[in-house]
Length: 240
Image (tube, rainbow, N blue to C red; front, side, top):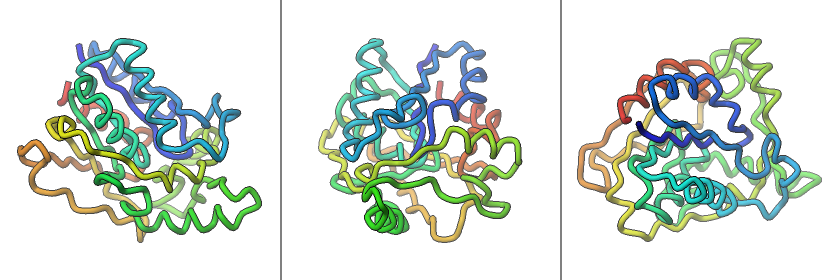
């Protein structure tokens, strides 16, 4: 039995994994899909002070509290920053890092460094009435839709769980100074349908641990856990 810990991205909640969790669990694995501070049923905790460290604490607290080890840690989108910082803090607990259409930072970087288009979101939030709330990205015509979801029923379901992202999450810089985290194997899963401007960095041919890079693709939009849950689960099960 492996332990999968699925970390949602900006604006989402742990509910977004609803179609993937039973597929992993039915294969005999333990699956955790927490909702981070400030989203969903924790939206009342949203504040300007919520940042990456808040979300790293959420994940570390869950792992330590449940005494989890050999964790396959999956981070979607913004959560690539979160899982990187978690691995830096508790590398001995992490068996594998999975960057699911995710931001992959270097030491000292923030979301804007990794994906410069994020500066547009920062600027919009700073000029808004609150000065710190970043609303979800707007729905676009197919094939982009709402985070890659184009089915009307699925988009309505997804829209119901989305809430604002705190600005600090895009501004905070991650510290990745623990050499032990470089020994953790990595897998990158890329969704190939994406809007213009949201270009990702090329994955280096060699992982930090010296092994060849492992990059898989799914022919769908950003929220592949909604649009291709079975195909995503099949890829994740290869790591368990």
